[in-house]
Amino acid sequence: MNTASVNTSGQRFVRLPEVMRMSGLSKPSVYRLMAEGEFPRPVKIGLRSVAWPKSDIDQWMAERLSDREVEA
Image (cartoon, rainbow, N blue to C red; front, side, top):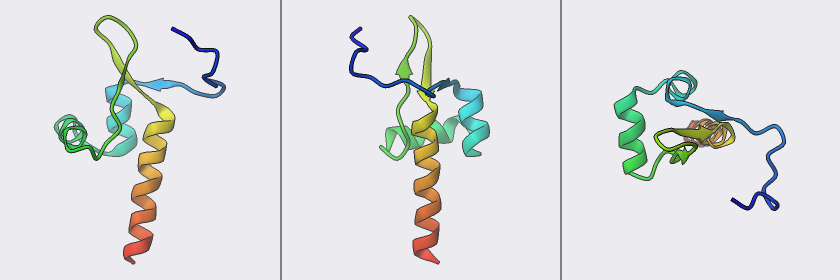
């Protein structure tokens, strides 16, 4: 994997249980929203492991908050 152009400083991966705690969503809701294109997709980190870049989850949450402010 070529990581020369990827800036990973301060970046970390979060697994599904933490994604659920951060977002307040259930496991089925996470996967349903992903299928609908409304939630970030995970990246493969091993042969049978996936995780989400924390920044993707943070951005998704920020977008939800900004949507709420626009509707108010």
